[in-house]
Length: 560
Image (tube, rainbow, N blue to C red; front, side, top):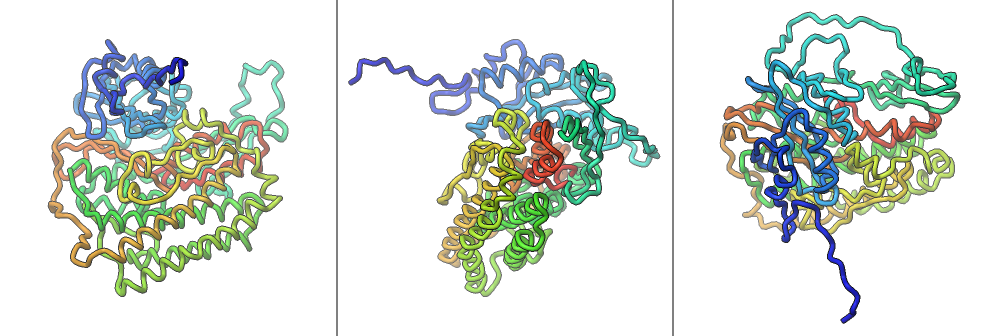
């Protein structure tokens, strides 16, 4: 035995010897900041005063290791407003804690958490815009989805949706015009990119300030596609009326992934089991959707970079059509699948089963050859490399602070994937790898997506093997779910899945009825888009367009 002293690793505060969270230790760490404690389905919630938000978030981040602000949910009660910060750890996503911040109805003002987590800046702006909570010391508290002149807050209890709204047209001003922090004010140019521009991937308005040829400032202006999906879900029943909506968030073939986010939250909220056979079907369908979404991401990215419409874009669309055909056979729809049901799936694979499985196997077997084509045409292309290598740099520390997830985070070397780290479905029973890349640039994010398709194909093949050999008598596609679901009142949950773009999370609070009292969607595109200024500052406009394309945003999911 060596005489050298071995210093044991010191675990984060609040972690028990068995690796589980010790919420009592966390409460002791927070000390006098805690004025009450709640039990949510996913985590314990610590109630704090509205003027101590930054201190509490800093303590949990620096001393307890909660470095991921997954989401911020705001809501209104008859007697108060409330903001909930859903915190997790990038290294251990199953370690969760909620920070609950109540404020009086007559003065809904809370301290901002944006000084601790950059991602809270947009989340708090959304909470202010839709619910009406104000955040002190927020760096830029203004509406984010609705025009500045909008009257009222759509998710507040007393909102009058019939009141007239006037949205005047205003001239665009140069946001650099009144800067006083630059002694020698440079000559700048204000450029509007979007909202109707092919390179913005939808109705996104990017307010861009140029200093010479370089990007000095970028302000993504969203909300042009906002449909108040959260309010629509709050008006639908758990059992039947909500499930069709998720398909319309990220509508680029990712429907089953979206549906699974809602299903996971609602099933855990109502304590609903899902048969093992249905879990395999869900896993197979979700990975088919992931491939379809990544194919379009890669194809449109090539189109953004050097206008390659005839080769890479059309190759991607061709291959995506093959996936769409399989998904249509499975679900009956080509885009808005509505295939999942609470407790399982709508139906089994189509008959004849042998033909369906043969089609899936043929596609999976062809993936290595198809991906080799993409690597030859894209990642091996000198023009592509010149445009994307060492541009759009997103350091891992910045990615974590902004809550970036999915291929955007993994392209910055962050080894975070909920399929493995917070297992659901059948993922923990299968053999596959999480893909990361240390490049931190536009090129790395493209490479991650290409390699992830290969891993998805491995998952699908294993699912087909299982489904083919499954005993016919045990092919249970749905558990016995009550026709009307009424979870216990004031039950709260945040659950997430690994969507095509990253962590897609749902927060639900029940009130004892068959409809949610609060339904909050944590969009990975919404969080990832916040990183654009970090990636674009100091770059040229084409590099900013490349960075935007590398994020693979879908505005239906950003705006919801």
